[in-house]
Amino acid sequence: MTLSQTEKLRLLEFTKDHYVDFYDVRLLIAKDLEDDILQQMKEDKTLSFEEALQNAFEKYGVIGFSDVSEDYMKKINTYFYKKVILKVVKDEVSKPKFWFLATAFFLIIYYAIMSLDSMPFVLAGGFIVLIILGLIFYFRKLHKNSKELKKRDHYYYLDQLLVSNNSILFPFTYMPLVLAPHIGRLSETQSLSMAILAFFTMVSCIAFYFIYFRLYKNRSEILDEYKENFLNKKLELKFEIV
Image (cartoon, rainbow, N blue to C red):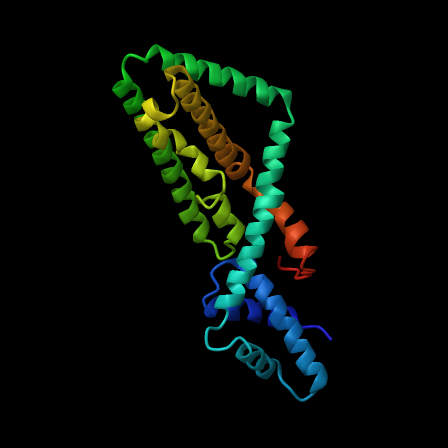
């Protein structure tokens, strides 16, 4: 026994009507509902689809789908960190070109900072302005695209992760902003303090590169892999509408 396409769509609409915002989370909960409904209808041939649906929903209690939605989002977060971010980082750091460019960038930043050694306020102010401008660009660009994606009914939680600051990479982007005002206290020697600031500035730029060019720009490909490797295989979702 299987549910019809109309009944499967009804499950998705049902989860949406009960405040499940993300399409992939709706699919996962709808699959759970489908399994429950099929089991009920197998045990009681007289039970209608709608009656079985209401029976299944009652099992979630007064809070409805809140807890199960949170549980599924935690699983998606784990997938995102392990299968997306970690993969991207490992792919990049395995290339000699990455280390060459990172070293060159570090040296350029270090010598630029050392040239402003006698003007600490200019140096700190310059870093603050650059980082703030970077963050403004980041938030304006990604916030705009996030709003556009949310207008679609098929807005995935993975979309939210890809266009938001929910990434573990994001804290690295503003580290120079935190360190720059305290540059004189980073180390016992000025040169080492400058090297530390240059290093974290390099890390900040790399983090921006990962977030924007390797994650956000490739979100369509990442989303396709997510559907195949997480929704379909790991949770055995066979919905044709995925």
